[in-house]
Length: 160
Image (cartoon, rainbow, N blue to C red; front, side):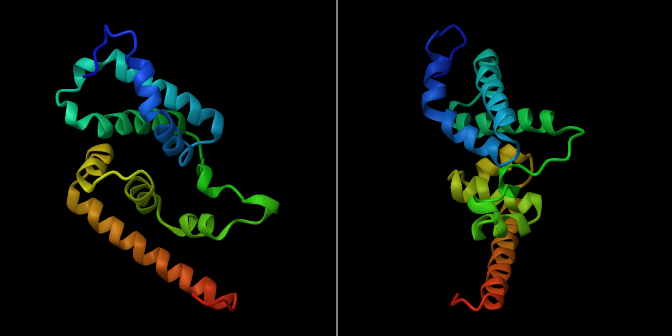
């Protein structure tokens, strides 16, 4: 259980969730801001443990805090996060291109479900939307990614 008066709480959160939260923040922000948002979310979690009423929702709560930290940094700033970055050698990698073709909501939902392993109900809590909306956007995102990838592979003359 997470307790504010536990001096090792921050260390445990960093060890267990720090890398995952940082990775998620990097999908929305550049490296420096992602690190700052991650640290803010982890410190915020320890400082506001009394706001976590159900310990089984810790992971979704941490991602919600990280998202809020990212959104605060994005306010008034046009930024696409690490998915918009170019790959090695100056040309975008195909996976990055696929993710960049998606709508921001679809990209974020697929990132949280596929890369971070959050369940639909956890993603719904993080984004403050219904589970049905999460599942619908995930289906649409997968369909758009598959269509885009098939078109690119066809245009490049590669086997899908």
